[in-house]
Length: 399
Image 1 (cartoon, helix red, strand yellow):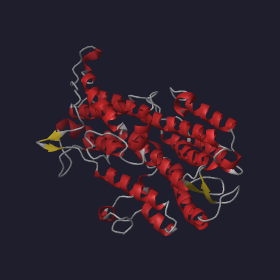
Image 2: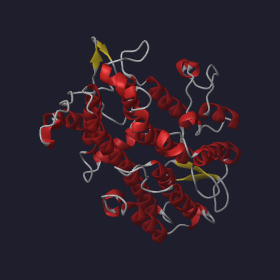
Image 3: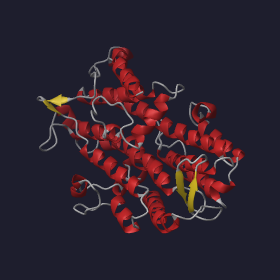
Image 4: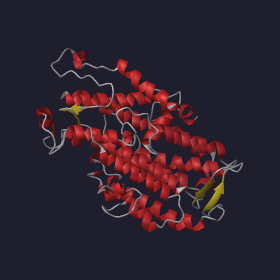
């Protein structure tokens, strides 16, 4: 499947050379996307997104630790809010980094700079889930889960054992999937692709003049676009030619959506838009740049919506038959539903679902006894409400 996705990327370049003269032959600079996401200045690569790779790798270690009942809340908290030099990870380079997951969670320029109340509330949700994994789930690791009681529950036929809270929620899945929205999606769509970031300060003048950042090979505007790219492709073996499924976050679920025949082509659409947008920055054509940003916003938002509906529908199919499988799917769905508030409708400054709407979804999933009380009607209603905001149906996303 990776080879299929890669071949789609490579084949797509046959169709993607783009001139901006289609609006009447104006004097804007022509933009032609390269074959791969490779850009150079004076013979050296001008692409850099090391901070994004670092945070993806930190998040990987955190998610693994959330499944290890020998860990403590203090250890988990330190991984989420890493301080430079502290030995929080197995990788010495991560320990030496001044980056952290928490600092960039719900921290975009467009959504949270002027709305620190919501940003802090979202960070607090992650703090709560992480703490509860240690205090509630780890302490009941060997107990059987039941209505109102945390513990373990095994999938039918001797399948995987899931570790859930009293409402059936796997906190590790909630954290994992919610980070896809609160970290990766929010930083790509609402921060680094925002004109407020790309055009900040003297960025336009510097980019027009080819003035690079101090000691670097890239202009600041180029770098900001690359940082958006890094939150999707930063853990690839060869980020210039991504094959996706390279991490447990946005890359993985782009791969999953691309593998669904209802959505084949979305991977090439996103990759091509990233390439063309970066080429437009080099060409100093900011209209084409912004057009590509809108494509990326639409397509990445679709990934979140599609997978939210998918997991709600998969969970529905197993409820009352194999509750361990159902609760696992619903826990993943919980995280993707939570991530809907970080999506971005193209050509607007609004998410597909507001925080209030998402909070209502989450309350519906967790009210009373939580997953133990859910039924098909509740899950279908929520799925249909989500799919109605996008260009896909519940049937397309849910299978």
